[in-house]
Length: 151
Image (cartoon, rainbow, N blue to C red):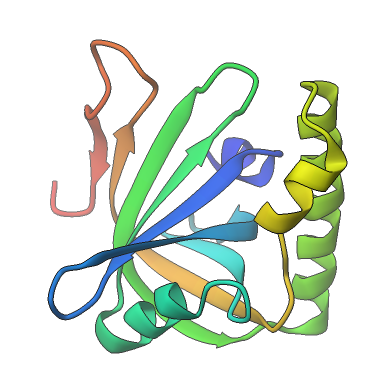
């Protein structure tokens, strides 16, 4: 799972405000902590201000990681903390952005179409204490819980 989320996969960050109105944003590079209990994700506060505001307000998050070539997908849920990204985290995000653009272009998506999706401008680090992991690949097993901290 750690190598999957670190690969060039789409990173869809789902949150909700206090009225439970959903908001999404995109991550710009993710990795697992050494103990595999945390997922760290760089996110643009400039591009996704509503998502960042929701995370600051209630910390609840669901991030879906999906490989664009075949839609193999996993979702992690948990509680997040935020802080400004450090230089090494911004560098890591930059490498992800290059890999992701290259991956999408190989699938036939033009660069000008990709550019608005991916940004690490005004980068924040979202650190997620993972409570659950789900399989989300389309098909009969989508939604299957693979792991829970409560178990």
